[in-house]
Image (cartoon, rainbow, N blue to C red; front, side):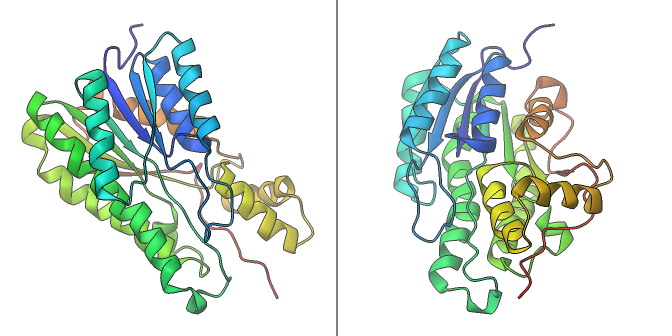
Length: 282
């Protein structure tokens, strides 16, 4: 079977580790050259470790080991000038952009009562998750329109559908914005054979979720593994932990030629998740 994205060029944001790294490697395995993008430093208000430059370079080396071309780009997606320069770098290196995966995202949990969220936290989460997705689309889409082909996948969250946790309405608002922005933008792209869809994962095992498991589970005397085992038994139909590879499998179909009929959709990939993480009890 031929590789599904042979000869294509993809951008993946938040690609240094976790879900982003898995998505970048999935594109490469199916034939794409990849620009792996990440901010590559921790943020003061984010309680879990973000990707590092070393991790980003490791992802690029793994892609090259597959026989694909790859570059690492440090970029804060919430800053227009950095996103514009990132896109220019990709065009300069590869000559085109076929696939954009807007995966970069953050959440804060300080404190566990939402009415005490600081304005700085709100702004950070909205700027990275929602504004960052918009900026990457803004600068990449003109290149897709010019070639009359493109695939855009935005990463949302099940939290939008579930009403989510009282601990982070700023995260829910940002991902809800990503969902509706996907629907709106897709309407303007169909004439150019550019699709835009959104994947809304359930509780997949990433550094963000690992931290949440330590915080939530630790408050209940559980390890993260024990906490998520209980969570899956209680809240998912399939009773299985989701992993980044599960999201990558679905993404690879969305970016393929065969998915041209699908655009402006939000797909909840969650193993039948019908509940959400619970904050620690007092």
